[in-house]
Image (tube, rainbow, N blue to C red; front, side, top):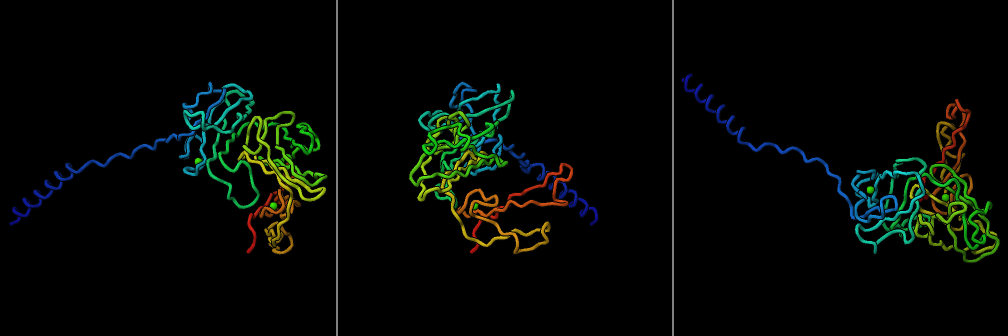
Length: 306
Ligand SMILES: [Ca+2]
Ligand SMILES: [Ca+2]
């Protein structure tokens, strides 16, 4: 009896071993391959080849977020220079942005520049209109030292010291400019003393004009450039209503004494866009004690209370 049982157990073990060896070998995981999109970068720095340098929307090659319809490529420009470029449907010069060439500046040899193309339709976005609303090209490069607003309101003077934008840090440039007479105007934000600009069609060497209208004498117009996205806003300043307050341990968690603003004051970039702001100077342990420079965070909740 014991012998039979032993024989049975050995048979089962042999059978199990045979079946195991016959089982399909688990497939090794496929390596993640970057998927090139059908949008291509082309420029004088690569011989204006419109089919060999694809952008990516899969989180590789410098693309920040996969699948968000913002196509990207970290590309090394060999020689430091001012260069011209476009984004095209790969192989198709008939689908190219912007109409005029875009511009890019590098200060060092073999500099890596992040080129992006935002194919999303932003025409229905809430808040202030940022231009372009679609087919937005941009590059994270060495920006010009200064930007100037130019248009029919200042005789198209692209070196006008009274229309120079102020660099606020974090890629944001701003000008609040009073226009004496009410009316319709056109203009753009351009590199000072140059027509390398940001306009209705974005970063372009002769950017399309942005139209705006003032309805009263001496109205303040805000010129706002976000170099992170390559988009510009030119619009009269407005005023939003809300009751948002800043509170934190740096002011004793007081929830009623430090209101935020949506009227273009107190660090607010543009009044009436539903983004509430307060430039707040902290002190004590929240300051940069080593350098003796207080930190001034810009705090923007970005919504309107119900
Ligand atoms: Ca993306
Ligand atoms: Ca605002």
